Length: 359
Image (cartoon, rainbow, N blue to C red):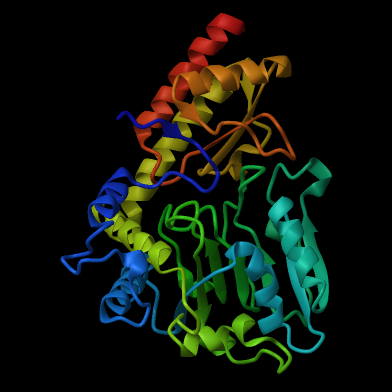
């Protein structure tokens, strides 16, 4: 069987080595005679899987003991609510930076629980850049500052980590594990798994311990970080198989040489694709060059009437999920960790050939 190249924004490509190991262990995990997905989450085997996954993630990101690492459910969308529910207190204020669709969703959810100050926005230029920090209007009384380091839909990425004396909260769903990251500069990092971590169904939350335990009494137990921190992310039955697969991805990343090695590879992949787009009059990328995402590369054709033809021919060439998000159209190639460099090479070759035939 020849696998296609998958450029989906999420659920996204998984490393082939991880899929092979999971298939080998599907029916019989390490001689136990059952699948991981059939195990009790309280079993010694599952607890060991969970503990190893957490430790491997801590190793990869250099996460200190000052932070809890939680494996939750609900995706980043649930974190849009959990963050303000836990950090705002009673009627507090938070600063948010608006750089696209996911920022807007986070802002809308936070407004249910307190006052939101939109300290900066790139909506004036259709979300094609990340506002420089010296343009932000931060609040002296904000409980935290929230931003989205990478907007998956628009392909906009912050080229800097903001400086703030308030806890910095970030939705790292699209870029976590794509390069080294100084976790110590953040109060909360959260990430839906289905891009660079594993399959859909699990969400990683890295939260500084001093920020846990301050949720108002009315916050439901399942939405209180303390509940999950106290229970080792097993207050209820967690998505055990997704947790297991995430652990295999963490081990795979270590085997590749860690996040420094992934940074080198990911930068090279992105440079190849943007390099060709910029050299062409047939394709273009709308994002300010210093704010372009390494992970999500949107592009448009000079003649939008060719979009359907492009996608049809790409699929026939075994390059899948290149349609842009329904809210913006065009094309988008998501080139996460598990998308091999050969996939980018094949895409560039296809784009060159398509331009020759239709340009």
